[in-house]
Image (cartoon, rainbow, N blue to C red; front, side, top):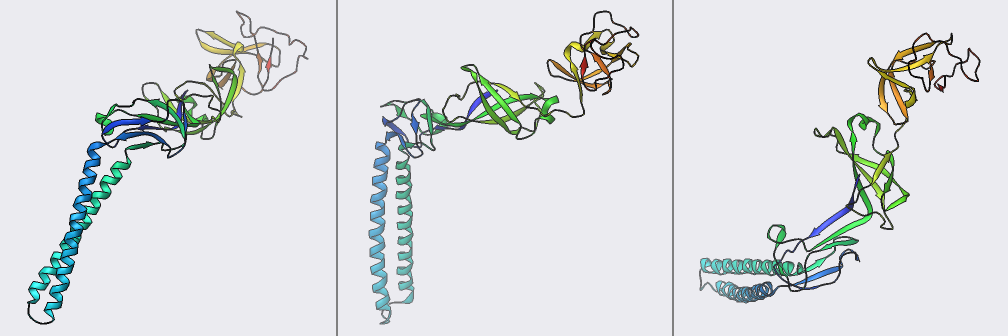
Length: 323
């Protein structure tokens, strides 16, 4: 399996300029909203000043239009001007008010952009990358500009492991797992299946599973790898035998059993799952069969055997016998 941060945010600039200062280097613990760096934006500062000047002009024009409209309304009461003239002055006032709103929105836009001159942490985490320095030219966005910082939340880690298709039905959500890592070989970490891709990758015949493991002390590192041992539920109906009981020949896998008459019966079997030291049998055996754990070479059906330390008619259901 491979580790990834529970949350990872590469931080890019939203405004162009020059890096004025940075506050935290890689490995630093930061809090949400904490200032990481500041960008000097001389061009944006001038644009903001121009927008504020335009707003002042629009507000002055609005004030004059309001006074003019009020005067024309007063003159209208004396019937010395037409209603059309008064309506034109009122319409001009509405237009000037719209210009003020537009100019104010433009100022707000530049103020918001100026706020992006401060690069802040999006959440509590660790600075895992810093790709800039004081005086560096800063470009906007992720296309022309590079990421300035990367902040990762490592209090929990996601672990991704590819599970063979045959085992996918046995690995439902909330399946427990144990993780080991090479840097702490004596330590085991508890994890749990959170979700899966719900698809089989054609190239590998596996399904991608996502686990979550707590990492309060930061011992586990994002980007690293781990050995994952999944705790699969045992199949109550499956018969299993020691791997040493299997016989492989030209006919395929088989198992030597001992009948009630203490004679050998070699039975062909199919293998459901290979669990290493134990083999789950798909077919060919019954629960009452007595299995020879380490059959000698050349054993054949019909050979008479004696069960060591057992009466001749004893059976051990579901257990292996050494003949």
